[in-house]
Length: 196
Image (cartoon, rainbow, N blue to C red; front, side, top):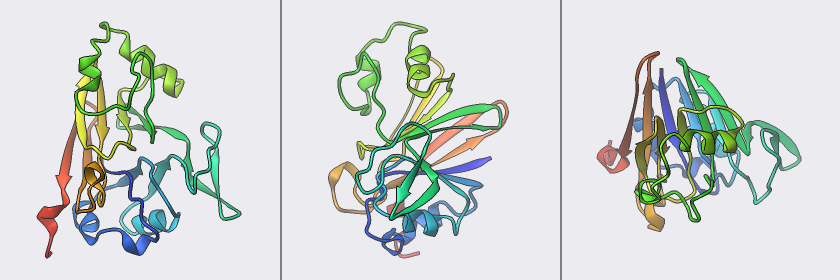
């Protein structure tokens, strides 16, 4: 299964998504949007590629875990504060803001390793976030793309397609390839699709 990962689109309409995103995610079976969504039209537009599930807040509204977010008076069941999905024998936790003790800051590249979390405790900490055992975490918010594996958990932040590292320029998405025995993720630099 091929899953497209995107986060922090932070655009006013679905039409504002960089066209390069559609080239980079062409052929995926599912898209996971890890938050930073300003309008549900972003999800509508991405659904032209594949079905979409999303995490986070919309219009600054905060909701209870796993409940749909109210969008302009209607409910959008594609979005929840966090989601847990099963695919090819893997359990994926999808969230916008990834916060857990003992980290006291956002999860940026290298932060998990720098905290020297004792062996075998990270899976329990992540289980505390999602309420179940997770082997892949997809998150956003920081605008920094990363792929890191720690204590058997694959952490992926696809960055932002239009605001990487808080710079207004073409950024990144990611692709996660899953089989029953493997998981491989890749950050895709959208600039390689410029002019396509």
